[in-house]
Image (cartoon, rainbow, N blue to C red; front, side, top):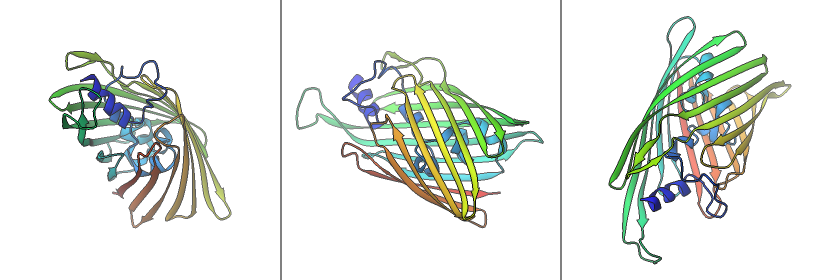
Length: 296
């Protein structure tokens, strides 16, 4: 089963050539995947660009959102697929709430007991999370808390867990946001009689917006410190020449799965369609991500 977990961690982008000292200590690597095409196109800067899908990346971002429904589909590396849906709603004069669900599955993973060109068998792996979060705006500050239940099945083994997300934002100016989040905090989990920790992750990010004569420009940056991998960073730039169209690009640092990201977004009559183009390193292939949101 350790070989199985290693395969899934590799699919999540952990380098085999330069293994971090705590690699393999955290379970559920799918929780660290970018959820949303806009996030993926902007270098993975989800803590400040989560938008209507903030329930997955930073619950504090919900504090300044309006009611909406969002969904997305992602063909990831290999045979991995990711699907998600989220809804945002006002719970009163000060609170905003959100519910979300995401499912990730990988099929046809080859299993070998010894070095061989022919696998002994193939198996599937699937992950599921159900997320809920609330957030409030307090002057220039936002605070949010999220809760998630998780189920994973790898071949014949399965596990269940829960975790908490905490997020805080500060708006020193109307054009600047600074964010900090502590994600995936929960008790240890057992899988195949072995104990693993939750993939706890510290995230620090900021975004700066500027109105230009020919549109709006935003610059984003994010640093992530996961339990079971090296510190990673991402940067994104978004340019909107008109209100209904956005062009995006980004770059990931210290992420062995890839570096360059790009994408675009279109908005009309309350609908927003986001697309991300994410090439992978080491012949992993290219992923195409789509998200659709509707303001209510």
